[in-house]
Length: 229
Image 1 (cartoon, rainbow, N blue to C red):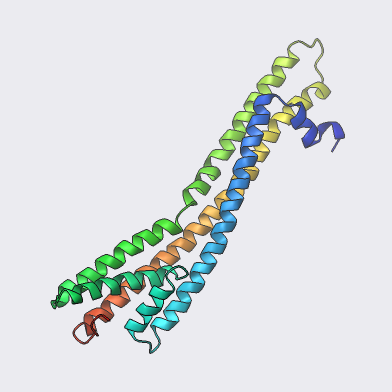
Image 2 (image 1 turned 60 degrees about the vertical axis):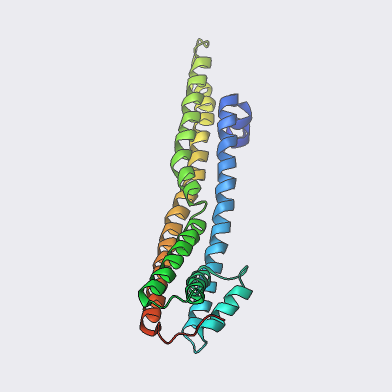
């Protein structure tokens, strides 16, 4: 590329509106990449913790022992373990109140798990709407910068008696840079949004399946389950 048409040179010579648009887009890009990296690590850690607890849940460990471990590891536990703990805690509270009706015990545990499930899904979906906003808005912000840049370029050309490609190219090029940076910010955000949405749906299905499975265990064995310790 000709040095006179380098991106840095074009941005330095651009109008302040185009420069402001580019700075906004770069800020959105940095923020979206930060959110993307955090979400990648968070989902990987969540999947690992859920799988670890699922193996323990299906082992010969008693429910009381699982609950005790969940209470001790409350800060480092995964969503599935916290959902289990909320359901078992509610079961314990109802048993302490001398509730013996199986339907009441089961409904109470299920409601507690559903509340915990919704809380976990709200946490795992955090920043997802931000990525969707970046992916949908960035191209239009870049397009605004491009339109403004082209208007500014043609306004400057109006004072020239002879217009050539050499006089038109820099103004048009600096305007198009805004659109390019808008796409640069939008494309990764859209790809990440779609990928995370798919992964979060899998997490939601996994947690929902666990709630139903644990509820079935409670329903089958409610009369023989140990009292709270």
